[in-house]
Length: 210
Image (cartoon, rainbow, N blue to C red):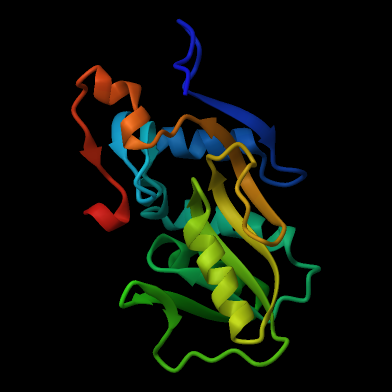
């Protein structure tokens, strides 16, 4: 993958959220919270990137979490959602607050022997209308696993609500998704990483590497 030209941004806002809380406001919340980090990072996906979005710098503030989840709830309020499901850990926090604001049930998924699963007595009814909520998308693999799990259990997934999509809108989740802030941020396989070639120290921030 080509490196950016001199002066070109590594991350660039692609599109705003529609009416309500705008993408510029979401970006301001992240930057003001110190959640937009620059360097050389190992992501949960295994890819390397020059930027990392530390969502917990935002989610540690209940007022930000409430406001952001309010916008996700608004985007899906007319979808007939019966249950909101999110993966541990960041997605779980967001899913709880979105469910609270929609007045519906909340579940979270965990990995059991490396496979996404519902535990703790959680059970979905056949054709139950489910909204999946995720914090940050890079490849979308975790959100896609949750969608596939809910479908295997007989639920109808109405969509995925995402706090930040750093794939530039290119993630394939198998269902429509809406993001509050969409970015195009470079991410490379380790063997193609220009930062590795420059011998810039690698920081492991992805949840599976901590």
